[in-house]
Length: 158
Image 1: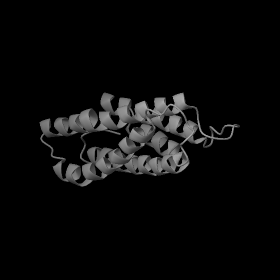
Image 2 (image 1 turned 30 degrees about the vertical axis):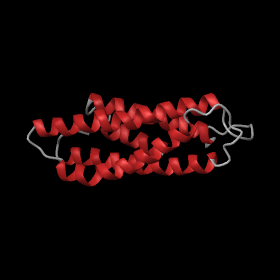
Image 3 (image 1 turned 180 degrees about the vertical axis):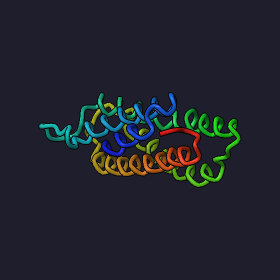
């Protein structure tokens, strides 16, 4: 996932201020996901679940990321394309429901872990975090399809 985001930053970075900010937010989210999941290169030496504060902070970042995608970035991209006489309606109709499914998974994770005060009863945390990771990876794939479409139709330059 981290390498995919690096490739996206190399390909589309500098094409649009909003996209640059979006890709930076995505990278920050991924880094914190990897830290929370104790995945390379962020393995930790302690056993057990991450600290409650780290889980809550990640959940806040996760909600911010998925919200900004839906309520700011996607709308802005579609508006700007329309203002240039291009339609991305077909793509939006195809991709946005898929992206929305990943949003539901992220919000469910947040609902379950965003306000926890103890990890005593989090026996499904690792499974839920893994499922969230799969959803984030899918979401990145869909977001990259959107960026690729915009590039192919010269709505952004790579």
